[in-house]
Figure 1: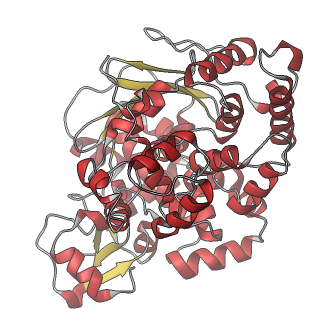
Figure 2: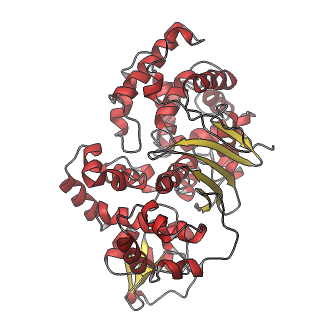
Figure 3: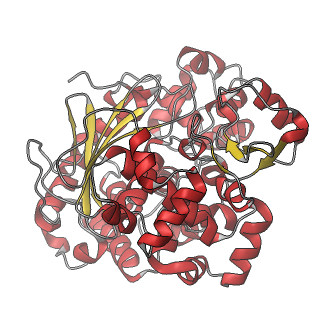
Length: 490
């Protein structure tokens, strides 16, 4: 979008927050870059420059605006919508792979050479993977500086910097303030005293309807791993450097996020996973605008706009849960998953809460005895087949996965049918166009609205909803009075 000067100018002049994260505006006379909705008086058009990423603006020598804080804007919805190399790379960078494994690790995960990755990212985003990771480290550092009382040396390494010197230089360059000055400017307020505990605000594009989002997560919560407590969805997180517990609560203009981590190096990755789970980088105006063009869907969208697709923080976990949920009720699926967790999950402590375990990894589940599972023999075989494929690496479902390849590998496994493939594509792979035409609830809702009710006819009709069919599914499911569609009240 940053190449469409006229459209960018209109967004800046109208201070349209819908475009925050789509592009960044830099002002040559001040040397700062902002989000489109920055509240200051817009500069003259001839003094504006537009960039596709914060990293590109930083590389061009601009520093972040202290007022609109462009580094804290929602991410571009392109990286969830698209499935190409650049989108997969951006999702992996957000998950912290460059900080952990370097550019060679990113390239190896994507199956391309480092040079190809560099060239593609620079061509589209104006910055390579190192610069994009550096921009993310700067944002993580700012969060830690402003929301904790940690010493600066600890913050430097927790944010992923190799040295205190590079930490100081980056913070000064990006924010035009030293780390100490940045902490001094932070809004006053109580800071958590428990090591590793942070309170954050996760932004999103309006509108956001929390009913089906949090309702689904709470209604399907696995005992010991997830719970709804005191108005917040809480769950355990299995992270690269340790584990964590997150509590997420909907607010009118943000999601309240409380994170407890055993290792603060996991902060950026934990935030990225929570944002993905809640689909916070979606563009509801684009989604709802297209779905409203269908007369049967328009009333549903107008009644409760801004529905998101509830996803997951761990794709492997969801794949296992999808198999457990085949042809059984929500309650039965939770019971099966809870048994696996108690038998094979890693125990954790949750003072004052009801979380007890991490969900077991595929490696841990690979050793289970199928005969101990209280389910039909065919489903046992399906579960062990999925677990073996995940544990061996022949099936990869993380944020950098090729969605088409993952679908094909899933479909090739015994017992994995179209419904399971599309559920995993929707919630684990994050495909916004995933569609489950054989789902009984979806077909019942379609028939009630006068839409085709057979899978083949419904699939043909759904072509007008592309590329947002996963969101259409949420609106159709919402016609049923099921707990997944209601925000919990206690």
